[in-house]
Image (cartoon, rainbow, N blue to C red; front, side, top):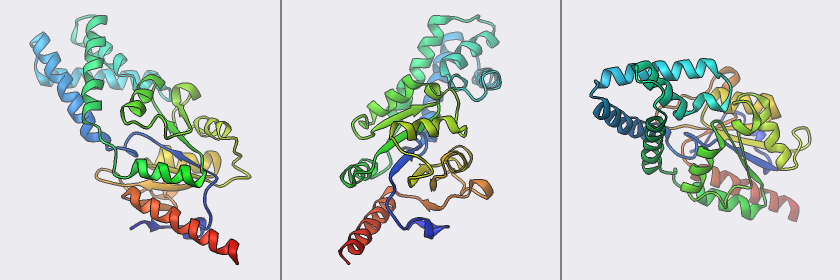
Length: 258
């Protein structure tokens, strides 16, 4: 059952809903773990190195790229991670192999990623209610577009904003504001909901950027936000959000009849 922290904020249907993607519409960790294992096996087999050396080199590469490109979409680039990892191992950039390892990662990742139950049903509900939707997500446009197509969600969402397009990762206000601009909504005039798992990037970010009413999607590995990251409501299943929208919709219809 959905837990409300600020129930008074859910007295009307939203004018638009923003959605995070990774670890909100699907569980990120199992897909990532499988993808990393596939790359680990391929790299250690190709170069006859230990798994420990791979892990240490990849971890260093990821840290260096993230520090150098902090706040940008490229800071999440698996291709850059692979390139730098090969350099750290002492093999040079090895462009062809970097591309191959990156494709191995994403091919395995997508094959293991599964949407949470009733995501599509929720999006159908929103379309019937006439509520516009937008994805607001970090990472580069190409891979996030691939995920949306792979999940079969490309005809469900009205808009998508990646941090590559916005120029900044969440919680910067730019991605959120661009999403509202695409939906022709204003934060000072319209009721906006944000659905996400991350207390900093999604919950605090959306509230501070566009005054959004926030709902945190929690499941294994996700801690409920506190302080600035405390959501207005918490859900573990998308069916809970469907029930809330239906309840508000019915209440609104009853009020109009009176």
